[in-house]
Length: 325
Image 1: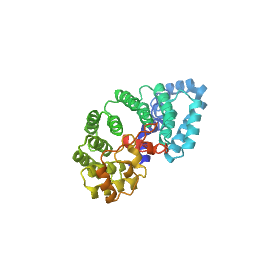
Image 2: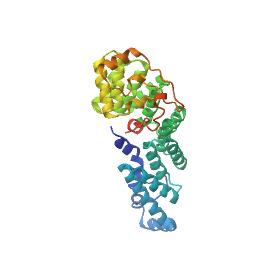
Image 3: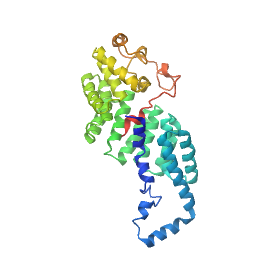
Image 4: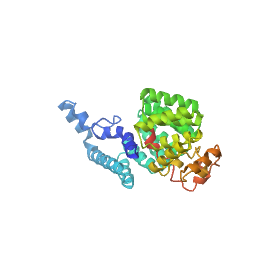
């Protein structure tokens, strides 16, 4: 599961808008106008004549911004979406696109601001609240992230991705694990067999010490998504806890091959002792790790492990790749 694929998922609503769906009641798009009788078409066009050029320019900028986002040109996204926001500050869409770009760049504070603005402009849109929750989690604001996901659930109670976002957040912070288990079960009830949701529940089981249950979920997740680094890593840790060193070494090596920063993904509550992070996952090294017991990391000022504090940009960059599909 790639970051690119997850960005597409986050942009799904936005892409529907620019492809011709109505957007927050603020724009009559071509698809909408096509269903209006001709006389009403003329009335609508006349009413919009004054701001037509500005609207057309903003729409062109949103298209361009979306294209640049999908191609990974985040500097251009900042410029194009920024210009769209200046032209039409009441439109939530460029704020959302800009927010996604900022999330990918790990610029969480600014992403939070953009998603807050989008949520204020389109209070019935769960996507803005989802983005806000992701950004707040990036800022290590556990309560704020859960509050945003709760707001999203009120708007879309049957969205399994939001239930999963709450479960994954609890697993990352190693807090309220029984609640997280219930949320993962709800997500999987709505989307049975989803690999990301199985991965999330695997993490909850791992935190709870239910290692066999964790391995079962990780097995199912990896069967459907063989390169899912977080699942390989979690399964490797579960094997390590069961003293199955060879299996642990295989999975942890696979995780690090898929994502060089995978050890940093769990910095809030590390799964391995620091001496075992980012080191060669040889069986000899992991055998020592298995004897080391629970990791003891002193949190740095931002809440990260002090050993990771200097590398502030290497955070849970998989956030978009793990929460929604």
